[in-house]
Every structure is written in structure tokens, then in C-alpha cells.
Length: 309
Length: 305
Ligand SMILES: Nc1ncnc2c1ncn2[C@@H]1O[C@H](COP(=O)(O)OP(=O)(O)O)[C@@H](O)[C@H]1O
Ligand SMILES: [Mg+2]
Image 1 (tube, rainbow over the protein chains, first blue to last red):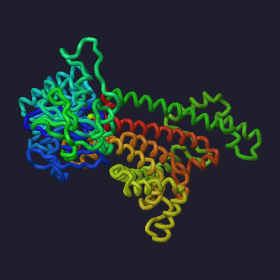
Image 2: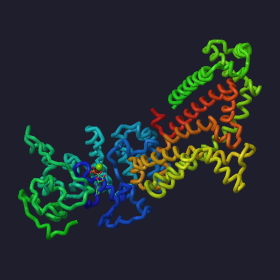
Image 3: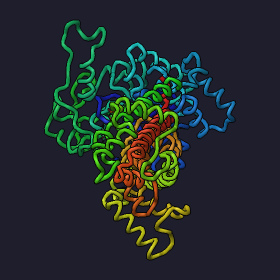
Image 4: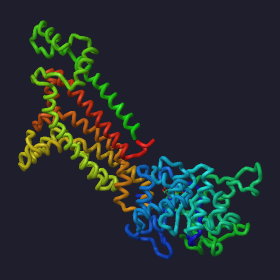
């Protein structure tokens, strides 16, 4: 996955396919028993691999900020909003108490919170889910990060609030120019929101490219299946059954001895029984498939000539 | 906060009231108190006269009310064996037990909470095993045996600490360790499991993702949550210790409440037994209240509606 400054990358895929884990790996945080192995993780050209704990502290929250899925639990219930914002502000910003408080109030206003003084003095459980997610976004903005990872930021919210929060993120991005990794299992929100898409399956990126290209001409059969399973106004006929992908996602931690999609694929061949690399289709578009669909045609590619990742 | 306090306070009063009834009934239903007080070989006439003098011939509810009235006036009656007011007898014994209990719980907390945190930070490693082993050792050894071991090592072999009596602070060291060690496994295990949960919680992940130093994440954002059930457990354990550990007080010749209770039961010193039961119940209820208030201070969801 790559992301240019100020750009939005949508990471899509079914629940459990490794979106959160892969995105959090960018910040060096993986579950206690997981081991982070990567060829390259870099921010603005500087490698983040093998950083020391101290060095990570200069990155996390400061240059890369995360907005988590569940605003109900991602704030500490024991401290007021002010306590929590101040703790993070103090960690990264050299502001005196008064300037820091002014900054917190300003941030809360920026995320559309109307009575910021009151909110500052409240505890998370006194706020609605939508408000809490706005507070999380305000915290993310605290240090003007270069990258914000929003991990399904609207999944836990009421439908009516979801659109508001997504619009807020887009507006803030225009204003502040941060890069945004928007993780979602909902292809419906991607079209207007992302510059590029990475489709994940079983722990791997199986297709990546510009949003329009991937949505209009998916190369990987998994992307195709995903798109057929959601109704698109104007394309899906009224009353026609929606498509679905038979079978279940294999565990992302299973060893990749074959194409991960082989058991659910509509067009498998025997050559699919080896690990498949992510292969470029054009400079901006890539798919992890030896029989991708290009320009409406299935094209045969040769895995032997490509090195497996 | 006020509503929370009032509610808890009412609960406390209710608990003490109920236990006072139970305590009173137990003492009176477990045999004829007049016969017990008159002693073996007393004539029926003697027993009758004791019954009259102490009001045991009145209906039980009436006796209870009379007793309660006196208690409210601070009069716990007289010990017929020690020939002194019960209040005085208790005032002589309680400080020893309170000192012992406070020191024992302090020892238990200072040992088991750091061990529990350590075990949770390095789960299923040698550190974890050692911490669990050290704490659980307290449960494996009977407390009298552990007390005797302490006496043998520190009192007899090394001769660094006194082993009996209550003359100085040094006298409380060994008994406090012996009594406190018994409470460590439960506190340690609850701390460990609470920390394991807390360390995996979403808000701890947030704190880490925002670059807060590890120790701050552990203390401020994890330990605080893990402490909520532990606080309640500590209150119960301290209540148990304030009830007096007969074994520990006997082994170290400390004339505390546990020792007094045991002797009073043997002497059928009913007024003393009743007073002790009531005080222990009150201590338990007050400690529970204190734990609730403390938890309210730890977690605003408990206190702010
Ligand atoms: N690259 C990977 N290697 C090993 N296991 C993985 C990998 N990615 C995901 N997993 C496993 O899959 C589980 C679900 O991943 P997660 O990132 O939570 O999925 P999602 O966010 O897409 O729902 C993780 O808990 C982890 O055990
Ligand atoms: Mg996820």
C-alpha cells in the first residue's frame, strides 16, 4: 500500500481479512503474540522499521494518528475529555496550560462540537457515540499529523451519523492536508471518498488502484464479487438478486501456499495452486491474480515469470 | 455523587441492622444462656436467678430492643467474667487487632499488586510463574505453620525480631507478615487477571497509539481499571483480619479481638460476644462502603449518572 500526501486510500475487504492489523502495523503496534515482518514501512521516505520505543513516541499520535472503530471504548472512561486531550497534547506539543486549553477548544470546534467547554469537562460515557468519534478525530488532529488512519470510523455509529462523520473527515482533510487511510468493509462509502483503493483478502492486498478504475473495471475476481454483492443505483436492476461469494474467508494467519481465493473463485485453474504475487496491470493498478479481467477480457498471465511476494 | 453516597450509606445501615439481628439471635439460640453463665453444677434456682438478673426470661424481640437501645447509648453491657464494662474490654483488645490488620493488609497489598502487575505484563513467562508461585505459596502453607516458620527463622535462628507480645512495633512485623501473606494470592490473582484484561482494552490501545510512555499507559490507563474489583476484595480481606485471626493472635500471644472472641465463647461471656459480632459486622459494612466510595472515585461511571 502506498499513499501520497493529502491523498485518501480506502482499504476494503470483509471483516477479519486483516485490515486493522495491517494498518496498525504501520504504527508498529501489533498484538502481543504477533510478530511484525515487513520489507518496508516508511513515512515520507524515512523507514519506520526497527525504530526504538522512544522514536516511535515521536511518530505515534504526532505524525501518524489513529481514529478507531468503536468510540464507545476507545476513550478511557476514567478521565474527562479534557484530561485525555491534555495528556496527549502535553506529550507532543510544547504549549503552556492556557495555550493547550485554547488548542483543545479550537480542535473541538473544528470537528463541529458546539459547546466545547462543557464537553471538555465531561466523561466519555456522558457523550453520544457520534460526539465521542468527533472527540477522537479532534485528538487525532491535535499534532497536525501527516497521516490519519481511520479504522472503520463509522461502523459503530447510527446510519444518520455515519455520513456526517465521513464528510467531516473529508472536510478536515481538505483543510489540513493529511493523508488518510480509510478502512472500511463498506464499498458503498468508497466511491466518493477515496482517491485509491486497496482491496484486502485473507491478510493480503489482492488489488490496488485508482478508485474509478477498480470500481468500474475490477481485475481480481474477489473485487468483482464484492462489487456484485452491493446494489449500485442505475446498474443493479430492480428486483434482481444480488450476487454473493460462496464459502468463507480463510484465516489470514494461515500459510499462503496457494492463491487465498482459490476455493471461492469463479475461474480457478491448476496454476492457481501456488502463491501468487501482486502483479502490475499498469503503473497505477495491480492485482494478485494470474487470470485478471482486463478491459472486459480474462487475460492469462504467467506466475512463473513473476516472483511471489 | 451525593445520591450515590446516600444510597450506599443506607445500604450500610441496612446490612448492620440485619447482621445485628442475626448476631443476637445466634447467641441466644445456641443453648440456654442463663445455664451457660451460671456454670456447670449450678442449681436450677441459681440458673433461674441468673435468667432474671440478665433479663433472659423476657421475649427475644424485647431483649433485642433493650440491648440495641443500650448499644445506641454506647453501653455494651458488662462482662460477667472479666467484671469490667464490655466497652472497656474492647478498648483494651481492639487496638492490637486494628494495628495487626492494617499492617497485614499493607504488607499484602504491597506484595501482591506489584506481583500481579508484573505477572500480567509478562504472561506465561518465567516472571509470571515466579510471581504466581510466590503469591500462591501463601495459600499452600497453613497459616499457623507459616507463622511458626517465621518465628523459627527470624525469632529463634536469626534473633532479629521479637516473637511474642505487643510491646513495640517490632512485635507486629512477623504476625503482620504471617497474616498478610495469607491474603496475597487472591489479591495477586485478581490484579493479574484485571491487568490482562485492561492491557487489551481499546482505550489502552488508544493510549499506545498516541505515543504515551509505557509506564503511564500501564499505571494510568490499565492499573486504574484493574483496581476496581481489587479494592472491594481488599476491603473484604481487611474485614476478615479485623475480625481477628485467632490462629495468628494465639501463636504470637497478641491479646487482640480474635483471641478475646475465642476466650469469651469458652466462658459464655455473652455480652462480649454480642458486642464483638456487632462491631465486626459494622467494620465489614463500613469497609464495603469505603470500597464503594473509593471505586466511585476511581471510575466516574459508578458515581456520575
Ligand atoms: N498479516 C497477518 N498475519 C497473520 N495474522 C493476521 C494477519 N492479518 C490479520 N491476521 C489475523 O486476523 C485477525 C483479524 O484481523 P483484523 O485486522 O482485525 O481484520 P479486519 O480489521 O479486516 O476485520 C487478526 O486478529 C489476526 O489474528
Ligand atoms: Mg477491523
